[in-house]
Image 1 (cartoon, helix red, strand yellow):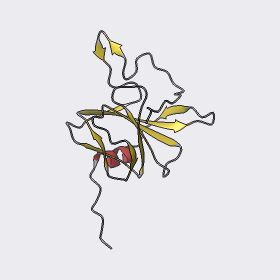
Image 2 (cartoon, one colour):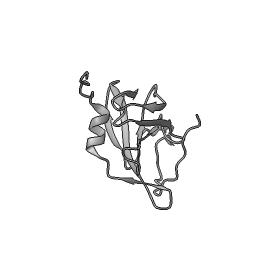
Image 3 (spheres, one colour):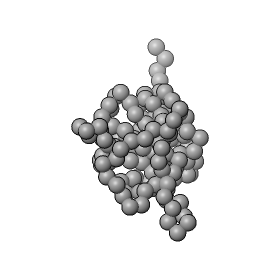
Length: 132
């Protein structure tokens, strides 16, 4: 599967994946950084995980439950690509950089304020399913 390329409305001088003084940039403006120390990163909804064409170990998560949004996670190791169920592991990482993007009328994407509920669902183990 080819990495997903998107058109982002905003362009920053320094972005994830760039190098400054020989050092790798792992996050950028608009990202929320979380220290995971190897903990699991979980799918917040049932959806799809794709590699991102740009950035440091970045993936995109999309879901029909929130069709106008795309969630970017950078710093992800061993990502699980393809279809995924809510609560399943998308990958791991020491530090994760999280950004929320919203589709614009022209088809491009713009960074918007991240949702703490989506981030919480990405970090917490889902409650056990009741057997019925």
